[in-house]
Image (cartoon, rainbow, N blue to C red; front, side, top):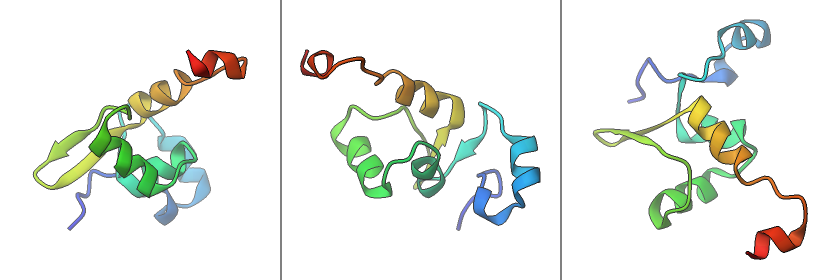
Length: 86
């Protein structure tokens, strides 16, 4: 069963979702993946293999802080393909 503290943006009207967005929001894997435009399976793979964003575990429940997730995404910005090879 999902925690009521987790944010499900799909269940909220667009206006109220934008008004409540905070870097401290805890996101489920599906919402986190959508937030940074990745597939759920890729985010899960990163969690297992390493190299992904920091996450929190509450028993079996996995949550991502919105601010941490976006900082991780932004840390992967490249200007050239050469930068990615380094």
